[in-house]
Each structure stands twice: as C-alpha cells, then as structure tokens.
Image 1 (cartoon, rainbow, N blue to C red):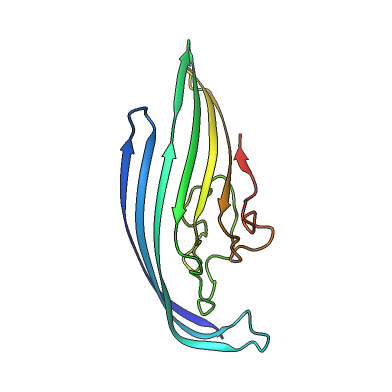
Image 2: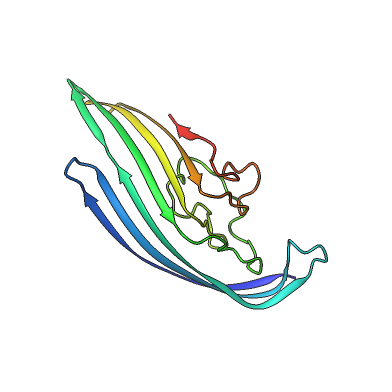
Amino acid sequence: GTGSTRLSVDGGWRLPYIGPLGDLYTLTASLRGDAYWVNDVADPDNPNNSRSSGLTGRVVPQLALDWRYPLVRSTGSIGQLIEPIVKFALSPHGGNPKEIPNEDSQDFEFDDTNLFNSNRFPGLDRVEGGPRVSYGLRLGVFGSGGGRTTAFIGQSYRARADSTFEAGSGLEGNRSDLVGRI
C-alpha cells in the first residue's frame, strides 16, 4: 500500500514592535522545507489512477505582518477593550505537490482559533499558499471582581481561491466564512 517517510525543517525570524500610539506589530519571516520518500502514492487527478514512488519535496518561504491596536478604557470598576486585528501573509501558490500524500492534514476545521495562523492546516502534509489577509475585531468587558465577557468576529480573504481546501471547509473561495465566539 501507500507509504511515506517525511523529514521537515522549519525556521524563522520574528520582530515585534510597539508603535507610538500603542499599536502592536509583529513581522515574521520563515522558511520550511519538507522532503518525502513516497511509495505507491495515487494521483488524484489522473483517471487511470497512476501511482508514483520516489523522492519529492517542497520549500515554502513565508512573510507575514500582524497588526493589533488594543483600545482600553476604564470606567469605575469596569474595563473595556476594543481591538482590531489584521494579518497579511505572503507565500507562493502551489506548495502541495500531488506526489505528497495527505496523511495528517485531513481533519481540518476552520474557526476563530486558527483564523490568524500562517498555515491553518493541523499537520505538515499540506501548506496554505498565496497572498492573503485575515481581519477581525475583539471586544471585551472586564469587571474588577474577575468577571468578563468577550466577543470576537473575523474573516479571511485570499487573492485567489485555493483548491487545497475542501468544499464546505469555510475557506474554499476567495473570502472565508465569518467565524466568531462569545
């Protein structure tokens, strides 16, 4: 049957910065390399269901800029937060060769916890590519006794649709589904 062995190396550089108005920036540059030795991998695009074996891989550079502007106000014993968040990410399209089997990134769920991740897949077999921007708004009310209520809503936009994401995943088009939490 199908078999694969993977070697992955990931490295990067991160530069946080606090602007004069209290806005927060984080610039991130990363490079990831994956080498696979595959055996008897089926080609999903070929109707004859041809199979491939051998060495394959990819190199994925990525540049990202995260911006947050937490606006905080206290009124008596209540604190309030309004925080717009935007993340721009750039990486090449087509980082998922068909020779690489998808063993660990099949159980994908798009939600508020991975909206601002540079790669939203849970494993290493698939990568998200192309220019994209994620944006959202976090709101919060905090009491001095420890009580709090928070809410978040956000969305993502890609310059071009990515066929890597399955239909119904929330990310199959250019604009994602809205995600949030209360």
